Image (cartoon, rainbow over all chains, first blue to last red; front, top):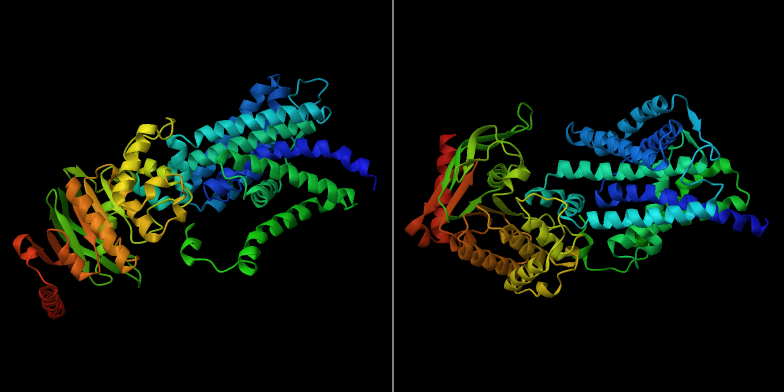
Length: 303
Length: 259
């Protein structure tokens, strides 16, 4: 129980939090903005990692490999979107179908279940060997991504994506093609998720076909922790995205603390699920057991 | 001009729940007509409006507006020509978005939505002006989330959104039914003012016979998916609730006998 061990682990937690924060922003776009629970992400994060590592092994520079990952993720989002809109499959199931097919596709991309890349031989953008550098680069990326998304969701097109999630009936009545806006949202989200996968595989020095298992839960954890901790003070859209990234960092910091207390790391996924369950339950319990009676009219405003 | 020609619509065809909602409707509205629609539950009033709006397709028949064939256009493409206000105040606005953002969505109805910038200052001025006409003080709360507004305020805002870009046809589906009587009157007055000012062709469903008589220049009554009473011109002007009740009884008796 040496406190130094914990402190030494913290920079790694921050780096991982930033990388997963990008993934969580993608989850935020589907879960919060579009009001869709998109399970594609478990597959598309791996796709991002796989495409990135394979492109770099084939001699492409890191930036090109990451653009490739971004494009592959958007393609995955497009598939889920088409399954949902053109084929009328419920969004949750459409995501599961894409996720499952991506498992095969990811295996084909990597040709085996695990591909590693050496930071000594390849010019990786980030690596866990240089954590300070990784934190700086990821922080800059996070800022750029939030700025671009803030701009996009302020444009006419971006507003129509937000309106689709807020009220699809009203959106159609105002002439918004909600099928198209859903696809756009899913493509943005999965593009970001794959980009995060590309960063993650560089950071770890490998891509693994199983690296995406439970990714959606980690993303949700970040979104919900960010919301619970910063929801009251961060009201601006960009600030809310930042809260999601902070949520991811808090999540990894908490994990480090728990492991520092000596919990077996086999419990990682269980712990994640418990964290998400508790944080999801908090607002519900709060409303049910600790709220003063308020005007009923506003309570249904979100419907 | 709206032309509805022998439109039929059956829900759950071929099942025990089969329901013929619209049973051969022919209806022609002149430009500037303000039609009130009454009828019992299940008469097909809302279905008719939803068929015009394209919420679901017609089984048979055609719907044309100003010589544009709407029959096979998807809902979001018809929106270019239509303004709609729903019964549920929650349905016409996006609760999690600001008042001006909602108006901006409505202002771009029928236009291409690209990566162009957000709301310009000139637009904001226009919204402020239009909101002031509602007399609800919303012009000073432009960035407030719509979810914070009352049902009446939201309905007034929806009405404004439906008419912000002059629609070829305004569809009002019992838009005051969920409001308290005082607010309902206020929203109805607003509706009348806007319709008169912009000379909008309007179809308004209502359950209130008094309102149906008071507003508009034409009244139709629906029953079992058909138009059973159609009163316009001078006759509409001098119509009373009593006349209407008599008509209603006669019509339903006749229908009962004919079946």
